[in-house]
Image (cartoon, rainbow, N blue to C red; front, side):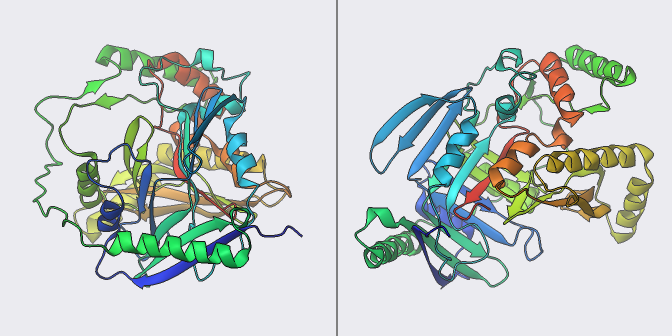
Length: 439
């Protein structure tokens, strides 16, 4: 039986006076836009999806990988090390396997600290190097890492149901003389985190949000395609489908706009305009990522893994009657149904690569989920991981999700490489966390 070597301590506080947005601003100053940090929120609160919001800043360790070049930054020791790896995800996995946490001391059933970051679309090339080599990838014009993970020892977790805030910290026993000393160090770290979170701070600006989502901007954004180029790419994709080369491919174009807006203020506006179960503000290497999504790439809890493909969309109706009519129209649309079934099959295939035979099943099929602006057809696919496999294997099997690539997945990505002019980078990859316990 493995012996625990990581002490996880927590404290509960009432949070009716503090929001996750305000708490983040007390950890990270407005002018500190390069500090690795994150705020993961659920703005549509109280349901089974997105009960908790988490935030943290200044990780103890960072992993950055571009193609096969990996950089490890140890902030506690003030050291940097470079290495080459055919599979940088395995570097994070090997580091994770060093830690065996004690049962969390009163922490919520959520993320208690560990890895947080972004895995880009092109990470799939580590997993399929023969079929998807980096040499076949489109132009890399932004030069962002393909992987950036931070190891966060201290995090703040908000529970939107109990209205409690949990301050959680983890301390390796090897850094202290005994467990008692580690416990003291953990309590001191929590006290320091509490002082940061509760200290008097400048109030967030209560500015009006004048956002017109119904009209187009006066100056259109710049696209990675021109119109004729995009239409040509779509026609080529249709030819591949007609020839039986693929069933579906999901083309994308990048839209760019210059702005003087602060990224965090953009996030604050997004959470009002488009609230979703998964709201993301992530200060990463070379970029600040702001996102709003109802969809998970994959989720593991112990040996169980979940994939929830969303495919098939209609706008929300103006009233319940219109909503019901649009839902009926969506479920009656043969194209939308066929696409959804295809992507459910792809999710089943992905999970079957890492799950025990006979354990992969569709537990919810073709249900309509309603969000702030749209409704989607949703299904839930689950499986039990093979003995000896864990969350990193589930992630490898799932990247990138079929709803943003196509089916069959590898051939669809090859066609994306052929037709899209620039690399996708973080788009269509995954943003998330891996806890000390491997969830």
